[in-house]
Structures are given as structure tokens and as C-alpha cells.
Length: 129
Ligand code: HEC
Image (cartoon, rainbow, N blue to C red; front, side, top):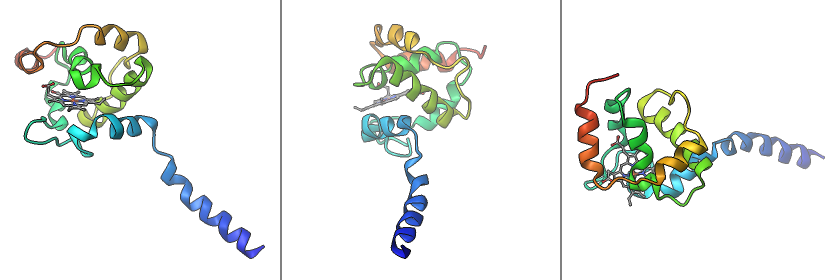
């Protein structure tokens, strides 16, 4: 009995560790190999912390879904939308409003970017909405 109670107690303690979202799992499995766990990237991959400088800029929302890493990820449209909602909140401090939807990611990933770097510069240098 004592052993059973102890086991149950330990199981309860272990629960919060499993409460993380599947968005986070999708990020770890599909994105962190390039972007790293903390999003800081590497010599060839820009830091996701820089997403904040595009916040509120026209075109940023579409760009974030159209970069090859996101658009071509082996995720359903719904999972990609959920992942982007999580990602944008995490790295810009602001949830996308309205949230990305399955229909939107489906549409955006059909037109991937030819030159993501040029597109980013264009968005960054545009005046905020
Ligand atoms: C193979 C490496 C690689 C993987 C995997 C990858 N990315 Fe990227 N990501 C990049 C590179 C490189 C860029 C810079 C733009 C470009 O050249 O594509 C980028 C840029 C981005 C940006 C633009 C940020 C900004 O403000 O400029 C977002 C958002 C993004 N990635 C999200 C994701 C998501 C979400 C995933 C996982 C589903 C992912 N990436 C997987 C390499 C990767």
C-alpha cells in the first residue's frame, strides 16, 4: 500500500513535465535542427529572435509561413498553423491576430518564396501598418 501511494505520488509529480504542447514538439522535431532549441540559429541560419523587428510590418505574416523551412515542413496545414501561432508569440511576444488558420497556411505554402532573404529586406524596410 505504502509502495502504491509512493508510486502514485511520483506519477503526479511527473505529470507537469508532460504538459508541454505539441507545437513545441513539432518545433523540436522539424525546426530546431537548424534554428536550435532556443531559436538563435547558427552562422547560416538567422536568429528567430530577429522576428520581432518584423512585427506589425505588412507582409511579415505571409513571409513567416512561406519561408522554405516552414512551408515545406512535413506537417499538415493545421499543425503548421498551430506551430506558427506558437512560434510568432514566442519570438515576437505577440500572438498573431487573427491566429493563423489551416486555410491560410494551405494557401500560403502553395506559393513558397524564391528569394526569402530579399523578401525579408523588403518587409523590414517597409513602414509599419
Ligand atoms: C534546413 C534548415 C532549416 C529548417 C529545418 C527550418 N528553417 Fe526556418 N529558416 C532557415 C533559414 C536559412 C532561414 C532564413 C531564410 C531562408 O534563407 O530560407 C529561415 C527563416 C525562418 C523564418 C523567418 C524569420 C524571420 O523573421 O526572418 C521563420 C519564421 C522560420 N524560418 C520558421 C521555421 C519553422 C517554423 C521551421 C520548422 C517547421 C523551420 N523554420 C525549419 C532554415 C531552416
